[in-house]
Image (tube, rainbow, N blue to C red):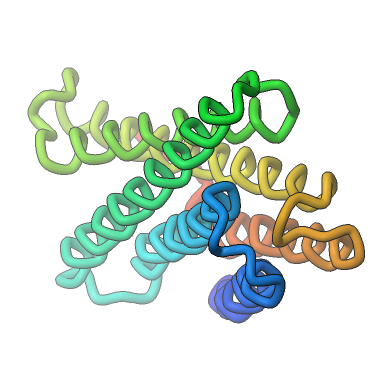
Length: 208
């Protein structure tokens, strides 16, 4: 069941990307600095979610493949961070050039919080995976650290969805009013399907 729901999520991602990016390209808005923000952020969202799917596949993969799966998860998340860093830089520079204040909307606040949260997740995950001995408490604490990384990762995914949903609601470039209902449905679908597909992994690890 979880595998089937995950497949639905995979199918919804290109639809979401095509709707947003296609809307921007159709209006020939790529020549403006501002519209590179939604383009980069959509790529970030999709890339980050693909990274989320990688460790989920551990439920069906051979144990010998777990290391390579987690490594791919890390690479996808690093690629996502490159996209969100560029997208954030674009918005910051655009506002500075126009003399506008930062973080004056729910979209801006949620986007900033989600971006910082995701960055912390990437750093924490990298530290736990490559430097496990740095986690005090031995194997028991390491299992808890993995669980908390997973839990906070899904919470950050909810924040990302909220940020994209507010962009759709406000009718920002790529999220024009006429299509906002569909975009809200798709962003909700992305999150709920990933959470449902990962239901088997939400249990807290058993004590050693």
